[in-house]
Every structure is written in C-alpha cells, then in structure tokens.
Image 1 (cartoon, helix red, strand yellow):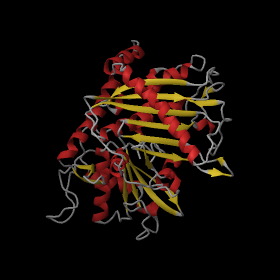
Image 2 (cartoon, helix red, strand yellow):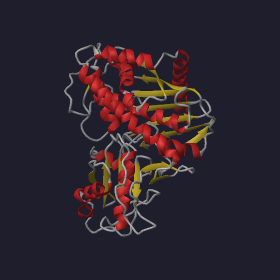
Image 3 (cartoon, one colour):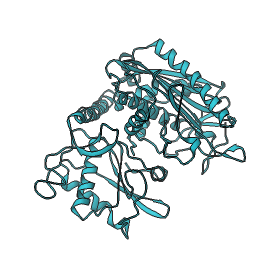
Image 4 (cartoon, one colour):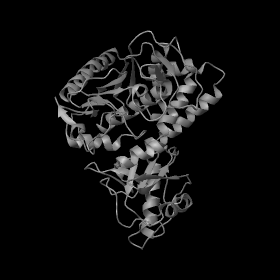
Length: 465
C-alpha cells in the first residue's frame, strides 16, 4: 500500500528502526551486497506482515552523507527493486518505491505490503561459498534481540511463534471475508455482535478500573500542563485508558521497557498514539519518570498560545498495569489545509482510525510486556469531551460521501470494551464497532453499518511504516 506524502514526511522527519521500519545506509542495488540487503530486508518485512525499508539513513536515524547516488530515483527505480525481490523470494509479492525529501536530499522508501499467509523463503543463494549473503531455503524475519535492537536476520527459535501467528492471523482474516460473502443474506451485524460478546465476556471490575484511570490520567495531564506553565486550550479531547487484567509480569519504568514497547509497536500512522519522543530536540518533550510510570507531554507555544497541530499527553504505568492517552481533536487544531471551524465538527473516519490504532498498539504493548495471551484481557475506556453543538461529518477524507449528522446535545461521552490479549489484528473491527457506536449515536442517532466500519478499520490497520 502506497504511503501518503504526510506519512513519508513523518517517517523521514524522525526515522527510527522498529519491527515495521528498517533503515539502511546508501547501498548499490547492482552490487551483491546491496542486492542482498534489499532482498533480505523486503523478505523480512513481508514475514513481519509488512513495513518499509528506508535507504539513506544509519541505524541511529541520522542521514548517511557518504556514497549518495547522483540520481536516486533512477538507481532505486521500482522495476529494479521488484526484480531483486522476485529473484530471491519463494513467493512473489508486490513492492512500491516512493521518494521523500529531507533537507534537500531525496530518499527512497520501499513499501512491503501485509498479507503473508505462509512464510516467505529465500529460493537461491547469493555470495561466496561458505559465507553467503543470502542462503537458499533461509527464512528471514524482523527480529528483536536480547538488548532490544531490531535487525533483519535468519529466523531463530524465538522468532517462529510470532511468524506463525502472523500467518495464522492473515488466514483468519480470509475466513472472515468468506463468512461475510456467504452470510450476507442474514443479519451479519447481529452475528458479529454475538460473536464479539462470546469472545469478550464483560468484566465490570476491569472496565470500572479503566474508567478510573481516565480521571487519574487527565489529572496528570492537568498537572503536567501547569508545570510547563501552559493553559489547557478550549478544545475537544479524545482520551483512552487501558487496564491490563490477568497475568502481568513485573516491570519497572526503565529505558529497557520503553525500548521494548516502542520497537515492537505497529506503525499505522506517522504520529502513533504513544509517540516515542526520545529523539525530539526539545528537552521538555522528552519522556520522564513520575510516580513509577513514564509520561510525556507534547506542546509548544508561540506568543503564549499553542499553535502546533498536536497536543498530546501519555502515561505508561507498568506498576499499575495501565496506559493513558489524551489528544486534542484533529477537528479543532490549526493544521494546514481546509478544515472546519474549531468546535463545530467531528470527523467520523478519523475517530474510527484512531480507535483502531489505539487498540492495535495497546495489544502490542501488552504482548511486549510478556503478558500471558490466553489469560490476559485489556479493558479499554474512551472519553470524548466538548461535543455539544458539533456535527458528525467527513472533512478530512472526501473519498466517502457522508451527510452531516447532529448536532450533539451533550458535552461528553464514555465508551468501553474488554478485549482478550490473544485477539488478532484481523479481529479488532468488531470491538471498534462496539466502542464507536455509542459515540455516533450522540449525533441525532447516527449509525454506520458494521461492514463499513470493518472496511475502514481494515484500511487503517493495513498502513504500516
């Protein structure tokens, strides 16, 4: 799936190696070493269920200023890269090559799509005997080492469980599509609701705890803003609190924990819910430890007023087993391009995208903390504020026609859901549906078909970089 210009710009502005993103210094795609790096990187990302390979950056995220090709677009033409992948991959898969610019330099961004159903295997050897650059029959994966660094390497014992799970999840998505096609004559909405209830039994205590952490987290947001001598602006906010219930190993608020969480989290957008700000230049944006948890506030001022298109605060509390996030609504921020007047609208697709992403990342966090997938559930509580008088609309993406609904007649709404940790990404949509329906109903009873919500969630979670 091709990335948007904003996504490429966000990727190049703060490049960081994760399971979904591989950085490589400038290479020659006609030399054996360069061919091997492209082939192994793309096969590993395919087995990772998609991601991007960015050329021209060192592992630390700094630009590589040596061996820059004179014509980057010609050297890394999509036909050249696709030929390399097709020559060494056991199963053909399409790649896309796009180009972004940073500080006057053009960089190639190679996108590998998700959807792997059986592991991709190298089908030939490259390099000298005894020390091949690519080994025939080898399975290359994105692997997390013991010191939390990521690399593309031959699969080892600890990598196979994740690889098999990725393939299984994609096959499960195929089964879901089959069911939707062949059961279209019955009330599929009701069937999905029943299945969701069966797989996610209500846990009132966990939900109550998650709702409590909404208030605890917002109080910390207020305190953090006061410490920065900032006033909370008159904007709408979206909050999420996630409480882990079950077998949660003991963790402390260490750099090692942050490395493990941020390296493994899926990259669905250029600005993830819990953004890793350790590479940011402003000291105030750096995450810090407070009361046994990590937290970060992203805010800037110009003449005393907040002007940047982000106002976020997050907290990761391993001791109490919860995550918290508060974000100013995109509908109210001063972002470039045409947008509605602040406080008047709520874009329905943005809300579906963000809820799906929050759920996906939170599940990833809990797995990275080595919680037992079969004995652990996550209770999610979401809260939207300053809704009164707004209309549910579609202003950010004009691909779907949508007549405004509303206005909302109350200021705030809270919606919650419990999701088992072993829920695959392909099964997130019904839970997003459950959360979002309560929000949409606030706008004069607005509702969307489960099929449409499922399509939007699938689109949101396929974006990986």
